[in-house]
Length: 132
Image: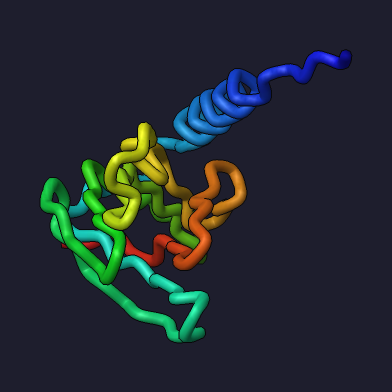
């Protein structure tokens, strides 16, 4: 019987490495702004419709069958492409009685959403803005 390695520690190490590189790569000319709101694009895979929603940091917003709560967002301005990161907690409201509390609980990156992916059978989330 083959034992499978747990890949979660590897993902955590990769995320920590990315955050260290990201924070160390900022020069004195580049600024980091913390916002009070985030803008997300939500794709409903069943109806194939995109929805744009704005959520205040610290407040929970219910969108159809999921609950989204942003805890922090940062916006750093590079040359022409700002890097936007946000800490999100997402719950599936139809998953009552299951052991899993959050569908997603972690940092979301606008330029590299595959680093820490949001995996849901019905919805996809993309971070687009951190403002206010």
